[in-house]
Image 1 (cartoon, helix red, strand yellow):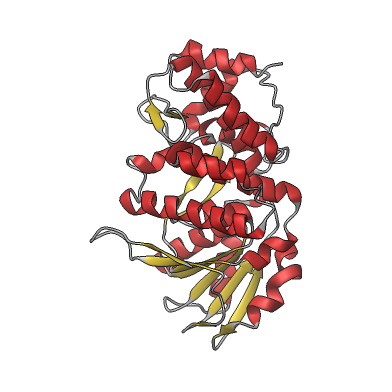
Image 2: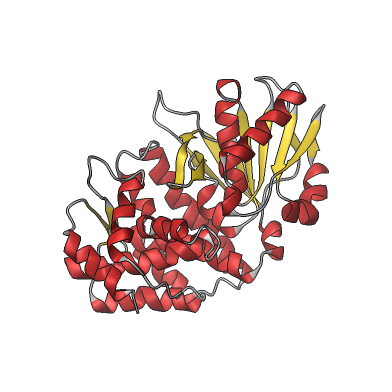
Length: 348
């Protein structure tokens, strides 16, 4: 199954997301595979056997969100310079969202931009992070505050790589699937409620539907000037949680799941979501072990952290909340006290 991402003329070059179609990669120029020790140990030999290129190098970066830094991007670039890479070279991101973000950013800035291919090995990166061209790193002020839009040349999503995924990583990916279903497709929500993703055929269908949603949104709004911002449902709250905990307490998808629950509480207070609809989303998250407790110790400090988010413009915080099931609202005028009420409710 293939899903095309077709941009408007004068935007980025179109590309295809291939699902279970990675047989042979023939590439011109030098190739560098960027991966982490865990993925390399499990799957690197399998990937190397499928690549046909004159020179192939492997660059290993540390595993984990806390390592998504400028220092590690610099390390990738140093390797490219040492091996005399040029503009005809290709980078391959072989790992989860952290590897994909750093590899894409390195590709965006090496000699002002070279090709890169995404081969995501986690559920989260297959359904979300690998598609759309967002690249970057974190710093002490927040998540993904340094980066660039740089679209991949192709994305290959292979279900074989998910077979070794730990349960927590799987659940983190499900959070991103739920995110897209709740805000864009009520029928997809019903599908998830009635088709356990532990069944391979159900999972494959959910991956394809998630990618199709993201492909449509990204093609319409590549640089997040409008509808693409809706994909940040749960992220405005979730990014603060990640930063407050030093990116060590929760996986990204787990923090997003908490953020979705906070966004749902805000949506209910603003009249966009009923209590019954909130409970329905909570039940779906619970089904995949995504009901985490996060006590907000200092609601005022948490609120002020929103202003460091990329989506906050002109001292205005943008919240993405569900509008019923299958719809969304982009809220720019949420009263501060209402938001603080939500945060206080999570302080117990």
